[in-house]
Length: 216
Image: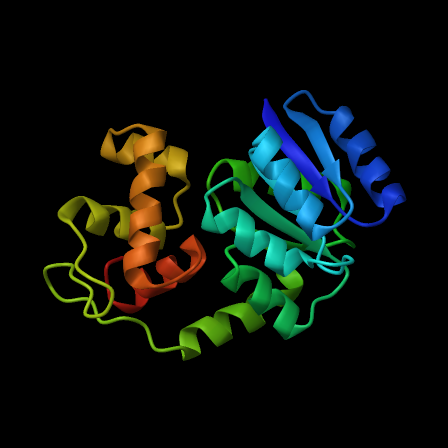
């Protein structure tokens, strides 16, 4: 069962999402929040697998809340918003969101996105994917030598280099665990360390680094 927290300042939207998730056999809503600060507090209390996060909320907004949640590895965050402006998209992903989806998404798309994020995959709305990739590719990536060491941010261990390679191939945590014959928990630990050493906030950016450096 995938445990989900819904964070949105509109009660009707939360009710609609709760009803949608109630029709599934593998998704369970464990808490709701109407603003960013409440979302962070509820995440600490209930420890969901995925937080479905709105952006524009009173007080602490969704980007600030996402940063607080991901900084302490409390949960994975799927941003669900009406806004597809570049500053919103990039801000959410820089804050560590694992996915970005628009509220115009079909119900099945939202459910699959929650499942994908819970499985360790990244999800980006098709409407913003091209802009996102163009922006990330335009950024200078850390130099990675033949030994797999990163010029800035410290060196990757051989296992971390393997993890980075698998991220470049677009594998989820479950798939990486199977490929490398290690546990999913171990994969999550290695992924966190790779992101920290590369100085990037998301596995999607790490995948771009891996591809640019010829690791895949």
